[in-house]
Length: 387
Image (cartoon, rainbow, N blue to C red; front, side, top):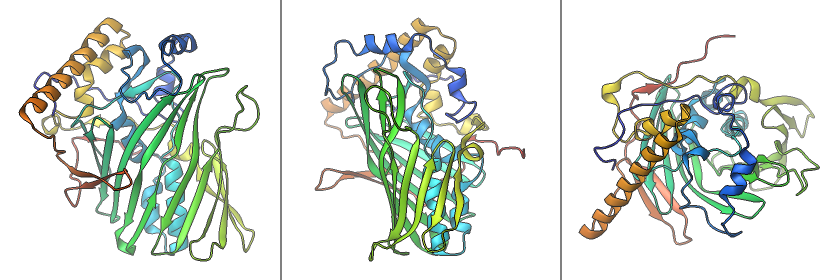
């Protein structure tokens, strides 16, 4: 858990968005040279899981906040639409669109803070309540639980990042799965997430890549959505934000729809039988000009809340006070190491507060929420005003 010396400063920053947001506020100069100097003494193939970044390379928010933003920071509500559709096919295509909407632009050269053990992030948007917890530090595993009582929707995630350095790039593999439950229709959708490639040379870029597989046993439908690692080493050919895929029947493998487009623009859905083409997802309507979360009830804020744990560091980064940021981050890291030593000396095993965590025979990690629903949070996201 977070010690008593946790920061009392609560800092909530703009989300990562297609237009506006944190990317416009954080424009670090000479970042390529800085990144090259950072990895100068690191061997290719090295696991960066426990690598400590200087604050100069941090954005003023935690990884838990980035995960949460993918769910609660949205303009057009693709999640609610999943439950409102009348047929299983329409619901499945809506789930595919929602899955794409969780893909957000990243900022080259800047990474969120690695969450400390027991850190939490609790935010509400309308009837949707979202709770995240860092359930393990070594390895780093994050869990998410979200519920919407009005639309009878439940989300559960378990994600484990493994970043590795390969000389000209850093490949971040995202292990784990996401589960979406539409209770009214008794349908469960299981899916994974794309991986992230941070390309350093010869041209810098941040690329989502890999194949997202979405499956619903109740409807018998399945989808494959491929995020292309589009450029060659020299930076030519392809578009790194291009996606394509298909929706098909699991039993017969018969294709129903074709998916094609760009996750940062529009994605189209083509009916294989009729040839009809429609827009499945519009990124500008979904993830541009997003609202920043707001603290509504300071008394209800947990000491483990991300915005409080990293508040002093985040504020120093925003102010570009790098000495203060380094000192504040060092205190957090030293406190966590001291707490880990104390647990080891006492023979104590740390237990998550909101989730159970287990490892399968195959070595994968699974997380399950302890409570049936997520309560309303002291932090909320204002609903977007009509254009």
